[in-house]
Every structure is written in C-alpha cells, then in structure tokens.
Amino acid sequence: MARIDLNVKNKGGEKFRIAVIGTGGIAHSHVRSYLTFPNVEIVALADIVPGKAAKFAAEFGLDKARIYESHEALLDAEAGNLDGVSVCTYNCQHAAPTVYALDRGVNVLLEKPFSATMEEAVEMMRAEKRSGKILTVGFQPRFDKNMQMIKRIVDSGELGRVYYIQTGGGRRRGIPAGDNRTSFIRRDTAGIGALADIGCYSLDMVLRAVGYPKPLTVSGFTTDYFGKDPETYQNSRDPQRLADMFGVDDFAGALIRLEGGINLDFRIAWAMNVNTPGDTIILGTKGGLRIPSTDCWNGTTGGPMTVYRQLAGQPVEQTVPLLKDQDGDGTLWQRKIYSFLDAIANDLPAPVPTSEIIINQAIINGITESAALGREVAVTVPEI
Ligand SMILES: NC(=O)c1ccc[n+]([C@@H]2O[C@H](COP(=O)([O-])OP(=O)(O)OC[C@H]3O[C@@H](n4cnc5c(N)ncnc54)[C@H](O)[C@@H]3O)[C@@H](O)[C@H]2O)c1
Image 1 (spheres, rainbow, N blue to C red):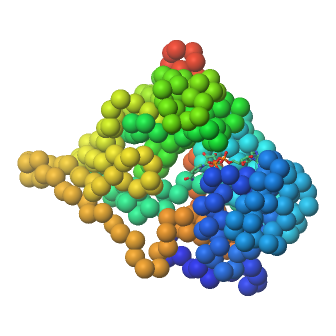
Image 2: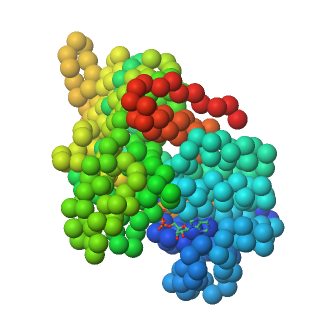
C-alpha cells in the first residue's frame, strides 16, 4: 500500500460516517485510529450490554454519537446515513451484524477471525455478493512491511517451488481471560480458542505468501489442558469459575495438505510449556526462508528473516534486514483503517478479501472437525 493520507475524504469531498458495533476491547483500537483521520465521524455505537456503548462514547468524547443496544436497532435507524461499520463483536457474533449491515447497503470492516463456523462464513460472503458492498477482514499484520516481505520473497522465485511450510507460534502463558474478560474462552461467544484467535494470523502469513492454495485434507488435534486448570488463573478472584467456563481450545496442531503439493505443518498455543514451538520455515526447491517466531502476535516478524540457498555449489545464508516504517506510513492500525476508508472512497476491492479468508477459515474449521473425529478429514472450500 502507498503511504496513508490522513486527510482522505469520501466521494464528493464528504466526511466518512462510521459506526461501531461491539464496544469492547478491540473497538478501542478501531476508534482511536479512526479519530486520527480528521474526515471521519463516529456517528453511532452499539453494544448489547446496557450502558456499555454510552460509557465508550464518553471515554472518547463522542458526544454526538447515537447509542444503541443491538446491531439491528443501530442499522435500522442509521444504515442510510452510514458509509461503513466496524464489527467488533466476539467471534460468534461476527456473522449476524455483518449480514445485517451488508443487506442494508453498509460497507463492513469485520474483526478477525472471519467467523466461528463455515456456515457463517458462507452466509457473510453471500451477503457481500448480493449487496455489492465491501466486506474486509481485520488482519492488520498484512499491513506490516516485514510480513509483506515474506510474500515478496516467495513471489521473487528465489525459493523455487515451495513444497513444505512449518508455521505457528504461541504464548507460554497467555490465555486471554480474566474476571471481567471471558468472551475469548466461552464456547457461546468465542466458538474456537487459540486456533482461531491467533492461528488465523499464522495461517494468513504463510498462505498469503504462497497465493492461498486451497486445502485438500486436514489432520488436526486440539487440547485444553491449561484452559481447564484453575492454576492458570491464579491471579483471578475465582480461578475455578474461569476454568469451568473454558469451552474452547488452548492448543491446536495440524498437518494440512494444500493444492499444488504444499504440505503445511501448523501449531498454535495460548499456553504451553516451552517458549516457542519454533520459527516459521518455508522450504522451496531453490531456497528456504526462516521467519523468527514472535511472542505472538504483535503483527510483525520476530526479527530479521534468513534466506538459505546454494551459491556455486556452496550453502549461503542471507539476512533480510528488518524494514522500518517511514514518516507518513502511519501506524499498523492507521494503515488497516485507511485501507477500509480508501476502498470506500475509491470503489476499490476489499483490502483483505473474503475469497482468501474463507480458505483460512476452512482450514480452522477442518482442524476442529478433524480433532473431534480423531482422524484426517477432506476439506472443501465452497464457491460463492
Ligand atoms: N485485530 C486485533 O488485533 C484483535 C485484537 C483483539 C480482538 N480482536 C477480535 O475482535 C473481536 C472482539 O474482541 P474484543 O476483545 O473486543 O471482545 P470483547 O468481548 O471485549 O468485546 C465484544 C463486545 O461486543 C459486544 N457484542 C456482542 N454481540 C453484539 C451484538 N450483536 N451487537 C452489539 N454488540 C455486541 C459485547 O457485549 C462486547 O462488549 C473478536 O472477534 C476478536 O478476535 C481482534
């Protein structure tokens, strides 16, 4: 992406009228970034918890924002007046507001992961298609220069034909839960745990680099040893309550066969007894790439990457220097928000297209299914 234009305007020099559905944790990052663009107005907010959206409005000084207690109420009243909406609800409430918004002609920036189920992903893509509106998914690591470099290296041909990828990562202890923070660990709100929450980023990093080939089969497993252990929540007021509430995975792994002869070895953790399950490596017939693991997931690589190849019959290693942001590039979050505004103003395709993210989701749901069945499953990606 070219540099961001903080003064970006909508068509006809108008301001962008934006709403936010779900005013929990991540809505803060959205609104903080929107407000750095002088031509964006946050005109409406909704949260199903009474008083939560109003408190959020007060926090940001959004005196004029209209407040609602459901996405339906917000969109019924405001759709004709909106240029876009950020859907910042928990995973199991991604589809309902997104479909409702698209069907009322509103462009959507939906938080990641795409959804909790494939049915919901398909439903959202159908709504996107019939509305002709933008549906983009909030994978901000895509706007990091070092992440983009991974794809540039693969596209350069220096690695030859890619046939094996090892990816994943995770946290030694990092289950996103606390006394007042339970939406990530409940089955009825999150649907899927570490596998979708941070696994979606890890998968996106490598799948995007190799052109998002479709999956053929998945053999996966998930565990919840740490999530179900009260000891994990020793700093909380009621560790047993959180352990009992935990209804998702805290660790997942899989071997995924992709079209084009690529084998993907994947693992992801919210908690584990090791510092990292390893760097990401991409093996090709002419070269290999090592991408240092991160503490998961700050949206960039864990350090300079290394390319391994043969030169005149000898093994050589080249370090790829870390790329730094320049003045005018904005922050990662400003680039994410700008990509949505720019697409709205200039009728551009969705910056993070659902045609790719459905493949990411199919793998995640394939791992869930394979884990439940205890065997390899075939994965098909529906055509929308
Ligand atoms: N891109 C990132 O870096 C990033 C980081 C954290 C979370 N996320 C994603 O953002 C989403 C939300 O995460 P969070 O940490 O903000 O969760 P959260 O639980 O703090 O906030 C979600 C909010 O949505 C509200 N809500 C749920 N359904 C609603 C509906 N139908 N209409 C209106 N409000 C509704 C809830 O009451 C809650 O206040 C998740 O899908 C998560 O994966 C993304």
